[in-house]
Length: 211
Length: 211
Length: 211
Image 1 (tube, chains in turn green, purple, red):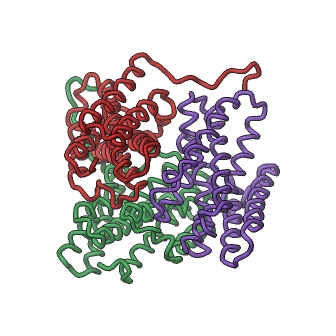
Image 2: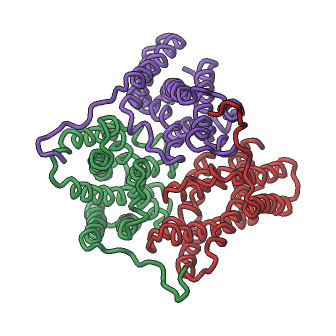
Image 3: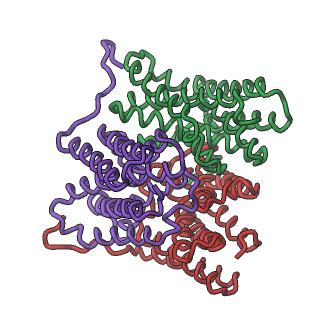
């Protein structure tokens, strides 16, 4: 799929908006930062994954710097969260749902951009997952949390599944819009199921001797 | 402005030197590291922002690896701080002032390099700010502090103001040296004013319900 | 040396395998993560240094994304550690030795790739050291440890020595295989000597006034 297509832009910018809200709300709730801290964490979370994706693809300067809409959407999302975040009764729920939404959208857009650069389905799947978890991992490192991708079993897995569906569909030439919706929806559903049921991936096998 | 001009090099290398001193002094005071730790933190702080700038612009390998003076200046600054840092009565003041100086110089050099790569004034402003806060953010992540850019309201703002003046001047074709001095001076003045007066940017609006 | 040569690939992939085991064992021991966390930390540790090297050289997409063997070796190493790690009596020793092995192999492969891109001996030496310490530094940041490169005096030094021997040999045209073995062996020996003897690099000079 051409990454200048409207579908790609809508996926990518919606992901940016979701992660900007998420990062800014995290800044308000966890770290109680002022407006600059909220904006900064919102924009890092929103733009970090896509920047890493574009750096790894050698698509430089990254889209963030070539298309003003990325900066505008990320700033708007952060400011909206700053203005209304304190009034949210269920700010924790909002953070989790927005994170899952951003994860799903970036898994798909990252995988599609990888396919557009002809890196192969396996690599595009990994690239989609890196795009998806990148912004949130930067967010967590900056506020000194252990990143969700390490502690939450069902965080990387849904991103890999969504990215694989998107990359595989692009390889096979399935229709772009339905494929993207199925890929993002599957990622979102697995992630939210994991959150709701408190599911975790299996730990290391036990042995009689322990470690 | 041509980024191979003497003015650009002086701005950039002076910023490298200020941040090398700053990073190395931070290593001595906060983390009590040995000579290798001091050198490493000094060089990361000094060279981190410029590397991120050059990566984002696709100007690879970064200037750090193409021009031996960057490595030499960063190592010299770190070693000077290592040799004399313990004798400093006012090491905390020195750290703060050097940080403000590096911030100001990199905001300007980052914005000018962005304009040289034709990314537009808004993008060059953001790029200048990323260059300015990049090294210090790496420094803080490595020693497990929450980065100043998140906690200190008047850290990103002066960098953005300085970068904007530099990028806008380059766009309008104002004389290079006075513009760079005004841009860096404004950034430095706002930053130091914030430190001296303990100013912070506004927090999120309060609501009756709280969060 | 041509970086598509079998010698380069063997060095680089063995380094990937050692760091994948190391990162995955660290995840099991220090952070007690589940299988996804173990795989993620293993792959970050294994592939992080090489990705940073390729980004700095502008060799994009990085080898990780162009050659499926990198992903396969990193995943295999992480899964092997996951399956057998708990049974290891001396998991701490294994972590330290694998870290020294990865450090040595990446110092050499990073320096050789730098020479292949004609960045000069000093720059190739630094690049080798960054490649060597990069993955472990990411590992430590992600699990919120202060990186070994800052706290352990004899961590960056052996990497620099090994990288310098490899880069200098490539410059002088010494035979590739013996040079690589001497370079990696020297790095490994210095690192392990430092660990065994508890050696540290010198701290800042004391003054009568203190700091």
